[in-house]
Length: 599
Image (cartoon, rainbow, N blue to C red):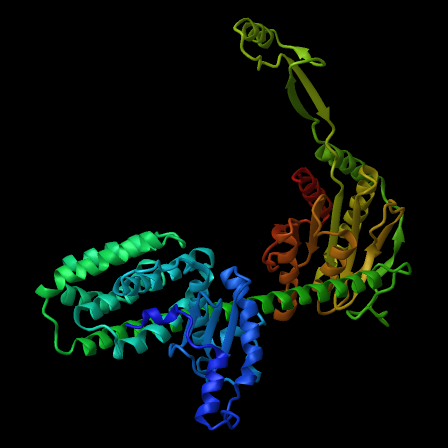
């Protein structure tokens, strides 16, 4: 195996290589390859910048060129403080296409970056030095155990690099299987250390390495494999600077092989068997990584789709709020004109027939409703009781005696004999009532009672709380404000007739919502819709969407109908009134209930 190739002793220097090249070429300048090494200088410098983050060391140099002096894809030279990197790992990318300094650029060349992360792990954790006179075979075994140890140690501090370390396994291990430097049982043991050792540090999954585990158990035997497993597991716990312990594990490795090897038969085609098993492992890891990548891409796409939908929904809601503000401004105009859905004055179709003085019965109803609203809005004072060891407060004799007993016993007194009660007034919530009355031809019977109810509710709200607001809109295809959201109580009752056609309840709800802030918590909120709801499908859909938005925000929605042929608007509480004259009482009861439930 060539695991030792990743940690190298100093070989010939760059100057020596250049001199030899000139000598072989009789002094002529060395021939430039198709991809000049000079073009890779920038890539090597940028890899060096990233190596600081990966290894935590600032004293290392990264050289990147086509081919390496060691023959391995990459190597770490501890004594030179250098990481050597083969530019061929970036194929088919050219130097001008590679920018390692940019975080995230490594996703374009995961195989090369995985090898670089592996060398960074060596640079960070392969810091023990071989003592003079050490047995070369033991050192070779220690470097073999070092491969999975440094990756496990790197994974502890940088767990997100696991994906790249899995990729580096395919690049570093597989080429060594077909051209081993070890033979027989030692070859199988080395494969187990490189593959199963990475399994035990969490780089590879157990299911992915089953083919190598089964073959190594068959070749090495379960006892020897268990012994080797204990050795590399113990080596994984070795400190970075502890050369003595690392070489001790390596010596146990060699002793275990020397003891068991003579009794173990070696298959003639062992290299082919190991190559096939490792190939299965590499295929499994590639399939797992591809599946994870596909799942990650699907999750990313789902999040992008969800984010786009949310952005579109926010934009739609913002547009709807702007449109509602424009509609409310045009509807609640000072002149009392009827407006079209786009906010322009309607040339005809104003349902208002005039105004009249309120009757004594209406004034009495407004007064009763005002008293009922004040009673419903009243909140009891809250009490907060606290205890303390010192005045002010009411003395609790039981706690005082307990405190004296604690003192007499020589312990630190913890009893708090003084009780203080703080009472706070709870603010009364204001009322927001929006009434939308259908003035199409089928709703003529509701005109008089709704006009009376609109005045009664507006008058009662103004008398109850200065922050209370009400408004009434008559709608068919156009919109007309019968009462406006002001703090002043209306002096006269606005009368109207129902001669319109079609319906525009959606815009009417938008105007009431914006004018009264029906979507905003903190007040008793009620939307009253007086209609038979015999609409076209598009008109119903628009109205139901607005009602759902309000009820979701906590606003109560009440639909009053006058005939049994009326349809129910989903999301509203349906109340059928056989007698139109009972509409004011029903609206007053709903308003009182809305403010009572407000918290």
